[in-house]
Amino acid sequence: MTIYDLFFAPFVDYGFMRRALVACLCLGLGSGPIGVFLMLRRMSLMGDAMSHAILPGAAIGYLVAGSLSLTAMGIGGLVAGLAVALLSGAVSRVTVLQEDASFASFYLASLALGVLIVSLRGSNIDLLHVLFGTILAIDPPALYQIGAITTLTLIVLAAIYRPLIAECFDPSFLRAIGGRGPVYHFLFLLLVVLNLVASFEALGTLMAVGLMMLPAAIAQLWSRSLPSMMLVAALSAAASGYFGLIASYHFELASGPTIIMTAAAIYGFSIFFAPSGLARRLFPRAHLKG
Image 1: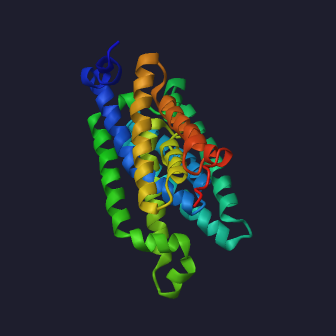
Image 2: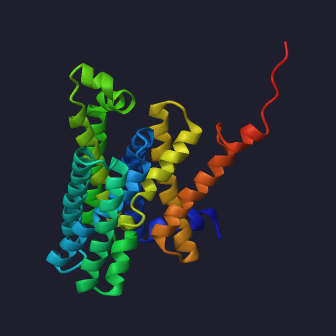
Image 3: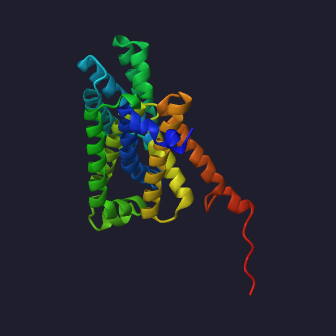
C-alpha cells in the first residue's frame, strides 16, 4: 500500500469522506478555541453536561421532523442547551446549590428525557445515531450549517476576545469598570451550545464534547500563551479528525469514536512528551555551567 493509498485515496475516491473531513476541520476551528476558554474558566465538565443537555431538544426535533433531520434536531438542541444553561444559572443564584451541582442535575435529567423521547418513536438504530453521531452521513446542508456555526464562532470570539479574557481571569475588574460581564458570559455560553450542536450533528450527544475538551487539554500541555493555545487546540482537533477518519476507513471502525480515540492518543502522547509533560519532569535537562 502506497502513501497515496493510505492517506489520500479515501478522500479522493469518496465524497462522504471528503465531507466528513471538512466537517472535522470546521469543528476543530470552532470547538478548539472554545474548549480552551472553558478549561481556563475551570468549566471543563460543564461542556460535557451541556452536550447531554441538548439531547431532549434534538429528540423533539427528531419527532417533529419524523426523521433524522439535522436542521430540526440542531434547532431543538440549541433551544434545549440554552434553556438548561439559563435554568442552571438561575437555580444556583436562588438556592444554596453551586452551579456545577445544578448543571449536573439538569444534564442527567436531560439525558434521560432525550433517550426516552427517541425510544418512543424511533428504532435502536435511530437511538444509536443520536447518541453516537453519523459523521459519514453528513450531507451538504449539514456541512453548510457546521461551516456557518464555525464562521460565527470565530467572528464573535474576535469581537469579544479582550473582554472575554478579562471576564475569564478577573471578573471583579470587569464589573468595576462597567464591562457588562454577564453579557459576555451569555455570549460565551451561546457559542458553547452552538458548537456542541454542530458537533452533535457529526459525533452524537455522547461524544460531542470530545473535539472541544481533548484538544484544549493538549494545547495546555504544549503552550503557555492564550493565542498559541487556541491555535494548537484547533490544529490538534483537525489532526484528530483527519487521522481518525483514515484509521476508521482502513480498519473498518466506527468513525466518531475513532476520531475521539485519536484525540485521546494525542493527549496521552502529550502527557509524556509535551514541554510540561512527565518526561521533562522525570528526566530534567542538566543545567549549564559557567
